[in-house]
Image (cartoon, chains in turn red, orange):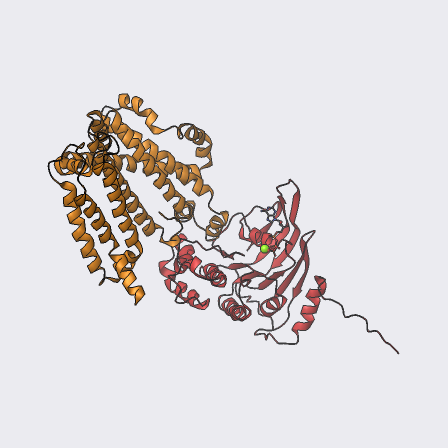
Length: 267
Length: 320
Ligand SMILES: Nc1ncnc2c1ncn2[C@@H]1O[C@H](COP(=O)(O)OP(=O)(O)OP(=O)(O)O)[C@@H](O)[C@H]1O
Ligand SMILES: [Mg+2]
C-alpha cells in the first residue's frame, strides 16, 4: 500500500512548462530549468535527486515563490504562485539562522511574523525537542555546530505547519547517525501532519527510505529525466532488499551505476 | 608559592607607582620659576592616592574579580605613576620648558580646587548641547538611513544630495547657522545634530543594503509583512554597523561641539579653554583638556556598555 494521504486536500503542486534562466555576470544566459512539467499530489513525499547545478534549488525556489519564472508557472491547489507564503515552508540549503536571535527566537520568528506565536507556543517547544535541541534554546547560532544550526533551521520551517514543506538538503550537514534519526523524525512528522514534502537530497537511500516519488534531474540542459514511483509500503527498513532494484534504476539514469569488468579467462 | 608572591606584588604596583611619584615630589624642590599655588594641591592628591591604592591592594585580596583584573592591570597603573613622576621632574622640578605654557601640577590642580564652580557649569552646558544635538542627529540620521536603505525612490531622489552635503565638515556651517537660528544654543545644537546625522545615516543605509539577501528570503517564506522585514530583520541585522555610525557620530559631534563653543557660544568646555588661553592662563587650558579627556572616556565607556547590552550576540568583535 502506498500512503498518499489522499484525505488531505491541500498542498497539491502542479508545475507547467517552467523555464528559469539567469543572466550570468559575463552576460551569458544560464538555463537553470528548461521546461519542467511535474505533478505532485497533495500529501505526497517527493525527493529531487540529481547532480550539482542541475536546478534543484532553483525549482524549490520557484515553488516557494522566491523568484519569478521566466516562463510557465507553478500552481498550488490550482492557484498560480506569485510570491512566498506561509503555506509553503522552506528549509534552506544553508541554515541561514538570524545571528542576533537565540535558537528559540529563531524558530518562533515565523509565528511572530504572522502574529500566531501565542497559540503555538507549545509547538515551538515540541519542535525544539524533535530536532534534539532541547537545552540549547537560549544559545546563539554561532555557539552551535553546523549540524545543530541546520536542525534549528528545519524546526523553523516545520513549526508553522505549512501545507507544503520545501527542504533543500535538510540533512546535508549531519553525521550518518543523526541523519538517520532525523529521517525518522521527518517521516513521523509527514505521517502526522500529511504535509506535502519536496526534498532535495544527494543520498539515494535517503530518497528511497522516505519518498513516494523520486524525481531524477539532469544538468545541461537542466530538466527532469524521470519520475520514479516508489511502490513500497511504509514503514520501510533501510536494509530492505527491494531498495536494490530502485537504487540500480536511479543510478543507471544518472550514469553512476558503474560496470563490472568482463571476466578474463586464461585457459 | 613564588607565583603567589609575584601576583600579590602586582596588585600593589599601583601603590608603588604613587610612592615613586610622592617620593620624587617631596625629595626634589620645585623650580622657583613657577608661580606658587595657594596650597600644595598635588601633595594632597598624592596622599589621597597613596591611601586609595593601598586600600585597593588590600581589599582586592578578598574580591576575586577585582583581584584578577588588578593582577592584570596593576603593572599599567604602576607605570602611570612613573609617567606622572617623570612629567613632574621635567616640568615641576627643573622647568625644562617655558613655565608660562607648561605649568606645574599644583597650578593646574588649583584650577579645579579654586574654580570648580565654573568648570562644573561648563560641563553642564556642554552636556546639554551634546545630548540635545546628539539625540536629534542620531534620530534623524537613523530615519534617513532606514529610508535610504529600504526605499528605492527615496534613495534615487535624496541620496545624491546627502552625498554632496554629508562630507562637508559640519563646523563650516557655524557662521550661517549663527545667523539663521535666534539663539546660539539652537545654532550649536543644529551643528552638532548635522554632524551626527550624516555618519548615522550613511552607516545605517549602507549596513541595511549589505544585509544578506537570504535573511529577507527566509522572512518572506514566513509570509512576513514589509514592516516586519524592515524592523525585525533588516534593522537588527544592520545593528552592528549602525552602532559604528553612532560611534563615529559622537566623535564628530564632540569635534563640532568644541568648535562651536570656541566660536560664539558662551560657557561650555570648549569656551572655557579658549577663554583661559585668551587670558594666557595655561594651567586653565590644561585643566580644560583634562576635563575633555575624562568626559570623552566616560561617554565612550557608556556607549560600549550600551553596545554590549544591545549587541550581546556579537560579543567581542570590536574592542576599545
Ligand atoms: N541567481 C543566480 N544567478 C545566476 N545563475 C544562477 C543563479 N542561481 C542559480 N544559477 C545557476 O543555475 C543552475 C542551477 O542552480 P541550482 O542552485 O538550482 O543547482 P542545484 O541543483 O541546487 O545544485 P546543488 O546540488 O549544488 O545545490 C546553476 O548552473 C547555477 O549556476
Ligand atoms: Mg542547491
